[in-house]
Image (cartoon, rainbow, N blue to C red):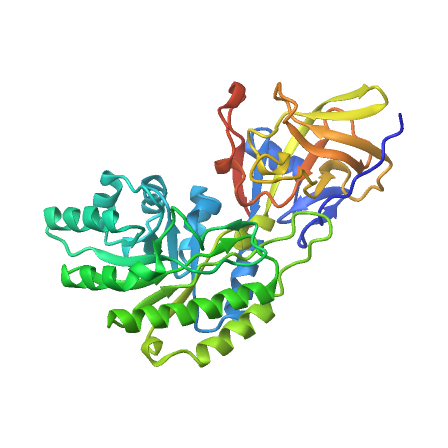
Length: 414
């Protein structure tokens, strides 16, 4: 049987060959593996993350930047971010602990997510974190916790809007949802929080994620501006802070193009210049994770076997879906498509082979690349999977089948 190559997503900008080998932050892939003590290994290029932050500042003057910790909670990365972003958004007590370990002040943190545990609520109140209320019952729990602690909690309301982010890879609002307070219930809840003595911090609207359509993102942002103005007027309050969410995507798959950041910045800027009077003193922030760190990460795994089966070639690596679940197509994908992939140790070589890249787990789900056109690889070569900086190590079942977690390093720190 003759294999036919299937397309893969585009390799992100910022990576080049050094002596024929993939270089990350100017250092060859084999050297990163050696320094880390072996593969599999995630390498995150801090220089590429810093460049993204700079691009954001240029496109969104006057808009705050929050890092969504769920995208990648690696400790050294959080410490790197601490001096470069305006705030952080978390979704658990564990993420709070990671930020505190990175010496991030609680006043720079917002805490969203349904089902907050009582211990996490208490810790957040003690640390001065802004809790994003997701339901009327959660409001009761937070107010009770504040009363017991003798502290006025810092509270915002996460709104479940009556619209969705068109083209989002994952929609987080609109219709019935576990996330946020339905918009029609918001004004009364705001008044109740203020009357109870809470420190009112504003609104949070997150309509969806992984969107590459600039027009759709701008439309969602403008709808958010209209919604929060209407709700603030109905509640009779100003809005100290409005978290507009994020949703900025990155191209993983064939045919996808990078988000037009300038178009989003121009569209939002125009909307902010025409915002309602009730929002005149509001500080606006965007909450980004994947867009900041996703393309800065590379997952390196070593080929341990080159196998031929009924006319097809398999490169078996020492990693797999237990480290990079999304690349296997098992993290929300309906149809499996190929992430960008390369033979790191032959990065500038022409493709002369077609092979499946599979992991070491004893399951047919562990396929990291399907019929890829690659340079010929043998055991000992390194495979690189790109777009591995977000929802990689922490979003994958590292304990599955007992192979253990991958190593992680932050590159480009000098």
